[in-house]
Image (cartoon, rainbow, N blue to C red; front, side, top):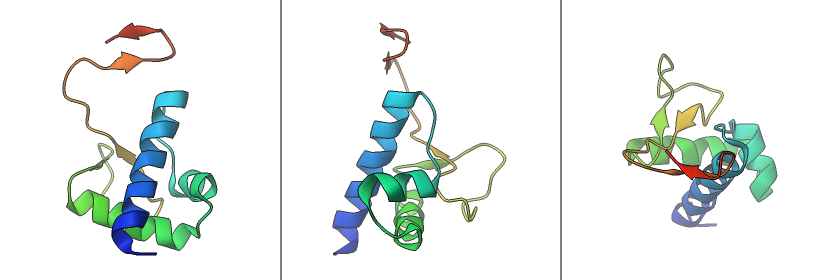
Length: 87
Protein backbone atom coordinates (compact mmCIF):
# COMPACT_ATOMS: atom_id res chain seq x y z
CA UNK A 1 0.00 0.00 0.00
CA UNK A 2 1.44 3.42 -0.91
CA UNK A 3 2.42 5.43 2.15
CA UNK A 4 0.07 8.28 1.21
CA UNK A 5 -2.91 5.87 1.34
CA UNK A 6 -1.74 4.48 4.67
CA UNK A 7 -1.24 7.99 6.04
CA UNK A 8 -4.76 8.98 5.01
CA UNK A 9 -6.27 5.87 6.60
CA UNK A 10 -4.33 6.46 9.83
CA UNK A 11 -5.24 10.16 9.92
CA UNK A 12 -8.93 9.45 9.38
CA UNK A 13 -8.85 6.74 12.05
CA UNK A 14 -7.23 9.14 14.54
CA UNK A 15 -9.79 11.84 13.76
CA UNK A 16 -12.71 9.39 13.89
CA UNK A 17 -11.70 7.76 17.17
CA UNK A 18 -11.01 11.17 18.71
CA UNK A 19 -14.37 12.55 17.59
CA UNK A 20 -16.27 9.52 18.81
CA UNK A 21 -14.52 8.99 22.15
CA UNK A 22 -13.34 12.50 23.03
CA UNK A 23 -9.76 11.30 23.50
CA UNK A 24 -6.77 10.72 21.26
CA UNK A 25 -6.05 7.06 20.42
CA UNK A 26 -2.69 5.35 20.68
CA UNK A 27 -1.01 3.49 17.83
CA UNK A 28 -2.41 0.09 18.77
CA UNK A 29 -5.98 1.43 18.73
CA UNK A 30 -5.46 2.94 15.28
CA UNK A 31 -3.83 -0.28 14.03
CA UNK A 32 -6.85 -2.29 15.18
CA UNK A 33 -9.28 0.20 13.65
CA UNK A 34 -7.68 0.04 10.18
CA UNK A 35 -6.53 -3.58 10.47
CA UNK A 36 -2.80 -2.97 9.94
CA UNK A 37 0.38 -3.86 11.75
CA UNK A 38 1.25 -1.35 14.49
CA UNK A 39 4.70 -0.77 12.95
CA UNK A 40 3.03 0.50 9.76
CA UNK A 41 0.84 2.82 11.81
CA UNK A 42 3.88 4.15 13.68
CA UNK A 43 5.44 4.98 10.31
CA UNK A 44 2.28 6.82 9.29
CA UNK A 45 2.34 8.75 12.59
CA UNK A 46 5.91 9.85 11.92
CA UNK A 47 4.98 11.10 8.43
CA UNK A 48 1.85 12.84 9.73
CA UNK A 49 3.89 14.53 12.46
CA UNK A 50 6.38 15.74 9.83
CA UNK A 51 3.50 17.22 7.81
CA UNK A 52 2.04 18.69 11.02
CA UNK A 53 -1.28 16.96 10.40
CA UNK A 54 -1.04 15.66 13.94
CA UNK A 55 0.91 17.22 16.78
CA UNK A 56 2.73 15.57 19.68
CA UNK A 57 0.94 15.74 23.01
CA UNK A 58 2.44 18.32 25.36
CA UNK A 59 5.42 16.89 27.21
CA UNK A 60 6.03 14.06 24.72
CA UNK A 61 8.66 13.95 22.03
CA UNK A 62 7.84 13.52 18.34
CA UNK A 63 9.52 10.13 18.47
CA UNK A 64 7.43 8.71 21.29
CA UNK A 65 7.24 4.99 20.60
CA UNK A 66 3.61 4.91 21.73
CA UNK A 67 2.75 6.46 18.43
CA UNK A 68 -0.26 8.70 18.20
CA UNK A 69 0.30 10.39 21.48
CA UNK A 70 -0.84 13.23 19.31
CA UNK A 71 -3.56 15.75 19.11
CA UNK A 72 -5.34 16.98 16.05
CA UNK A 73 -4.47 20.58 16.86
CA UNK A 74 -7.88 22.17 16.60
CA UNK A 75 -7.66 25.94 16.27
CA UNK A 76 -11.11 27.38 16.81
CA UNK A 77 -14.61 26.28 17.52
CA UNK A 78 -15.20 22.57 17.16
CA UNK A 79 -18.17 20.27 17.59
CA UNK A 80 -18.10 18.20 20.77
CA UNK A 81 -20.21 15.10 20.10
CA UNK A 82 -20.37 14.20 23.80
CA UNK A 83 -21.99 17.48 24.83
CA UNK A 84 -23.69 18.00 21.45
CA UNK A 85 -22.44 21.61 21.41
CA UNK A 86 -19.80 23.78 19.75
CA UNK A 87 -16.79 24.56 21.95
